[in-house]
Figure (cartoon, helix red, strand yellow):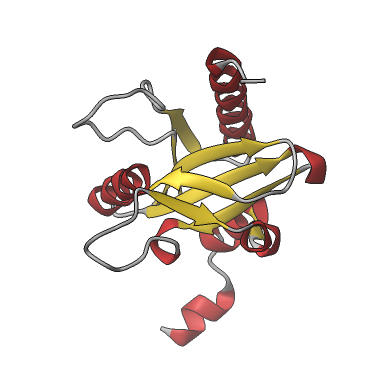
Length: 153
């Protein structure tokens, strides 16, 4: 039985909106891309951009009911990386796993192969997602400058 593409898109949109609300509550300036997920060839629209303490995070958002491998279009990841590069920020994949009741995060720069000829799809293995850091813990570490940062410089 084939899933309705409108239903899938709606669930993705719901996950993006949920993440926007959570990031806003954490004190981020945050916006959901007006055309995220749209089939626009030459434009680069990430799902979400969040900024706090002069740190920019550019998100590709995925949602799954269960923990399992995910395939992502490599061109999509390249576009998120390019947007983050231009913004001086970090490109991330935020994955909501309903069964775990958590959000996981992966850095796009560590996922894409460094080869010139990229595959059409990049596979994120179930184990990689499972072992990924919890999103809000990751962001908290990135935006908080501890005393050790000042001592080292």
